[in-house]
Amino acid sequence: MEKIKMTTPLVEMDGDEMTRILWKMIKEELLEPYIDLKTEYYDLGLEHRNETDDQVTIDSALATKKYKVAVKCATITPNAARMDEYDLKEMWKSPNGTIRAILDGTVFRAPIVVKGIEPCVKNWKKPITIARHAYGDVYKGTEMKIPGAGKVELVYTAEDGSQTKELVHEFDGPGIVQGIHNINKSIESFARSCFSYALDTKQDLWFATKDTISKKYDHTFKDIFQEIFDAEYADKFKEAGIEYFYTLIDDAVARVMKSEGGYIWACKNYDGDVMSDMVSSAFGSLAMMTSVLVSPEGYYEYEAAHGTVQRHYYKHLKGEETSTNSVATIFAWTGALRKRGELDGNKELMEFADRLEKATIDTIEAGEMTKDLALITTIENPTVLNSEGFIKAIAKRL
Ligand code: NAP
Ligand code: MG
Image 1 (spheres, rainbow, N blue to C red):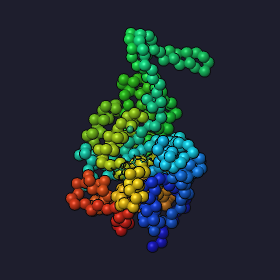
Image 2: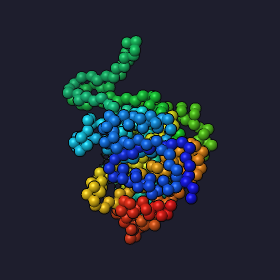
Image 3: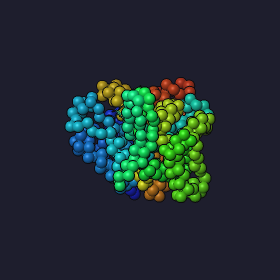
Image 4: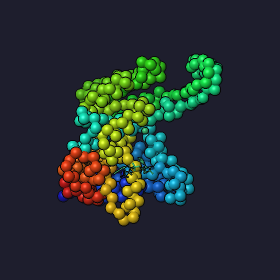
């Protein structure tokens, strides 16, 4: 068979521990036999980040701006224990944080739905993708404990020195107070990322806030989304046959539970934090969850939603067998290859991504899976495979 050609490279960000092992197997067994794989390789493994003073992470993000599509392996975010384990010069920042700061994007998380791994919400038939705004609100809040009676005010001092004041509360005893903010520019990029991703994936977009109670703060989110939608996306949505739907957050939660799924749910920072954990645990497993960072300029970085699976890696180092699920990492690759194909007009590459996803899903639906899925599947007598055996079973179908 002649291998599929690529015209533009993908940015490949290698990572750590068990996922680094899976990464290599996926390339060798599932990709390189079929594709003349063109990547610009960046080793974000912790050792190499340490050697380069983390410059490699910055370089990989800049390369993503150049080539527009990246695929990333899970990486260690160092903590005190890792300082000793890897003899680090510094407690380097989270690579995801560094990359996000450079690309300024929104993270979309979607479950991979297969028959036999049933969501515990029984009417959910299609994936629900959560888009979480990643700036501001309570995550950049300022708080005070109020010791006793007194007045709390919000004060805005403009550049010319003029002031606007708003009373928060006249305390007659102890209490608490919180100041939070957001920036129109950040909300605008969030909105554009959501609308673009909805068009890309041909799914409806839902957005919700508490604008009835928060008439200025949350209402601004609602207004910015609506203005950008009307000015830039309404026609494109109509053409694609998809909808933008705004409602109150409590109404959204109720509708989500009763829906069939199959849409993107844009959430403010706190709502996204809470709701993504609800949606992912209801769909079954972090190992079946993909994640993509979409920047407002149209750069895409694909990865698995889970970490480096440290516990399995230590077993692997001791020579013990592991049964680590590679599905989310495979789907990070297929997401990136499909997007590369789309941007380059490379139909073969896009079709390959579809086939690899189908082979992966078919393998599980045929009862061949890793241990984490075998524990929760409704399929009777599943065959539990080890990390390599599962990838080989997919390769056979592919
Ligand atoms: P983790 O890698 O997500 O794994 C936690 C547990 O979840 C595992 O021990 C395993 O449970 C289960 N699990 C996760 N992914 C699995 C898979 N693919 N197949 C089978 N089981 C899976 O989190 P962690 O071990 O707490 O964190 C390890 C490192 O990952 C940390 O250094 C952290 O900084 C990093 N991390 C990176 C990212 C990222 O790069 N995006 C995200 C999160 C964490 P059992 O042990 O019960 O089998
Ligand atoms: Mg959380």
